[in-house]
Image 1: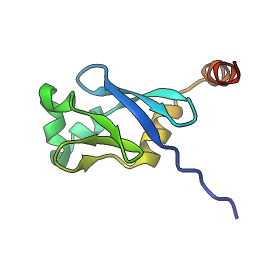
Image 2 (image 1 turned 180 degrees about the vertical axis):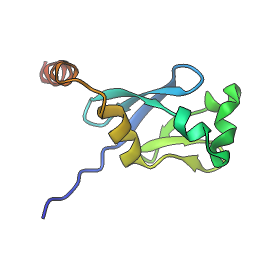
Image 3 (image 1 turned 90 degrees about the horizontal axis):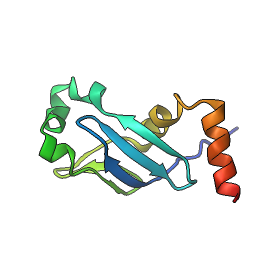
Length: 97
């Protein structure tokens, strides 16, 4: 039985109206695009630029005021699925230095 590692978000900064720059505890960085969330009425608050910019890393994931947060495994999956092996190698080499 394999145990899935839950990667923790340790830093988050808004990039634009739907994307957040994310850093995980293992040094891997990525971009989380919230555009798909904004299509759902539950997440409509994210469409307000001032609200969206309040994103922060807390409890290992992305959070906004008012108890709005994203599952950390979703952040990891979406931030890493588009990474190329070259990107992954750069991250690994940087971590070793």
